Image (cartoon, rainbow, N blue to C red):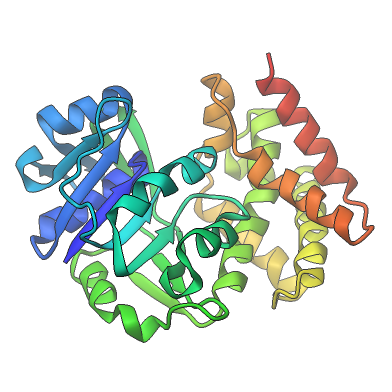
Length: 311
């Protein structure tokens, strides 16, 4: 089996390391910058939940802005796109080169709209909905801290590939210790994660607070109101969404479980990088406008985060 991992930052490098260590698949890693250079020269170092050192000989490497490795052209059985949201469409162009008639494509990047664009680019029959709850961050190039063990969630899409078609991939994830979790409703699965992200990420990014601090009464109430604005839009979109009480309970559980975490959007703001706000809260605002619905909190958070990163 040949697996291409495009946009290998923290999560992509973690997945690549675990798949390569299983020795059950050929793995291609496409990364960028100093991190890619370290992966090419020194391999992947995993710390945290598991200590793991993967030799660069255990996988193929492709470095963005230098040269795309053509070794998987027309030969990848699965393509995983793990980049920041704003790089997804660019990586679709590389993914096209690697696909054969039965290749399946999964976008693990945060945000709304990726699945629709993936289906439009590769066809519904090649598209699998995917999210992950593994926690990972990079303390330095070439090193990934596996901060929290989670799962890789895989879901079916309307007119899309059936999960029975990817049992070989599910087995590979299981044997690699990546905990596959199969869901019958891929869009509900994606929106479930989105609703948590829109409630946590921008508020943490603006306030500079860790996730646990958002459990304070007024902060938590604001997170809930932002999330429920998004839930209203998900239902208008025809998504099977959990009831409000369950959504609130889930939000509290996630904040408690990740209480020491600094979310990715906060890290992006502190390091002067582009955030994923346009694929999260801004998507809620844009979709709400189609239905003539107001989402003032998501609108405000979108503007505030966009103004921070515009300087």
